[in-house]
Image (cartoon, rainbow, N blue to C red; front, side, top):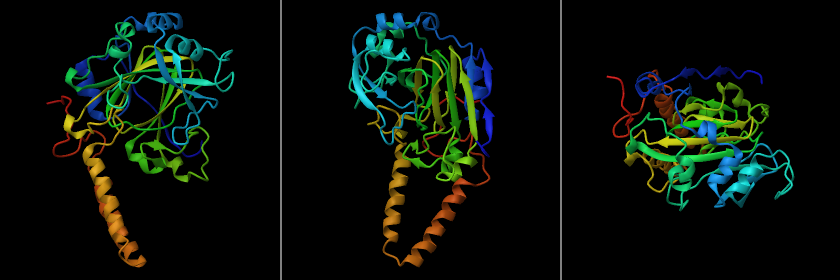
Length: 333
C-alpha cells in the first residue's frame, strides 16, 4: 500500500516483571515478548485435548462466510455449539457440518457467566484448561480485570479496534499477524465508536479513506508461545495465519474509579472521557442557536482549543494524564 509507513514491533526475550515495568511498560508502545513461561498449555492444547477438557458446554460463537469479520456491519451470525464440536469445526478448512457454507469461519470470544455483568475469566469458564495457562505476573493481582479465551479459524481477520485497558495477548497455538496503530493516528482511521470503518487494511479504498495512508502501521507475527503487550488505546487488527488458540489478559492500569462499572467487556471509554464527549455534544447543540457563519467561527475556535491540547509539544506516548486517573502500575523511581 502506498504511503503508509510500516514499523516492526520490537521483540524482547525472557522478560521478567522488573524489566517489563521499568523498561517496556513506561514507553506505552506495543512489544512482543518471547520465552515468557506460560505453562503446559504450549504442549497440551491440541484440538483433541481442548475438546476433551473443554467438554460439551455450550458456547456462543461468531460464524462468517467472509474471512474478514466486520463488527460495524455485522457480516456474521451468532450460533451456539458445544465447545468440543466448535473446536473441531474451527480447526477445519472445509466443513461437512456448517451453518452458512462449507468454508465458513468461526471465532470464539469467551464470556462471563452473565455476559451483561461479569467479565470473562478463564479460571471460571474453563477451569480444567486454566490450570494449564500461567498468567504472566506483570501486574498486581488486584488490577486483574479479565482473561479472555479466543479461538479462530485459519485465515480469519478481525476488525480494527481499541480497548481502554492494557492487555497481554498470549498466542498459545498457531501463528497470528497483528497490525497496530497508535492512538495518535486516530484521526486517520475513520472511527465509529471504538472501531475503524476500514475493513481491508491491506488493500484499502484510499479514494474513500484517503487519510488512512497517513497512519503509521506497526506489525508483528506472533508464533506459538509469544506474548504481545498492547497498551490501552492502541488500535489492533488480527489475522489468524493458522488455526489459533490464545488468551487475552486485561488489567486496570488506571484506578478502578476511572472505569465504567457496567462494562464487562472492558471496552467502554473511561468515565471522564465519556463525560467530556457528552459535554462536547451538548456544546455543539448549543451552537445550533447561532447563525451558520457564527457556528463556523466558534467551531473553528473550539477546534483550535482542542488542537492546543492534542498537538502540544509535550510527549504523549509514555504520559498517563493528570489528576485522579494516572497509571496505577508501578513506575521507575
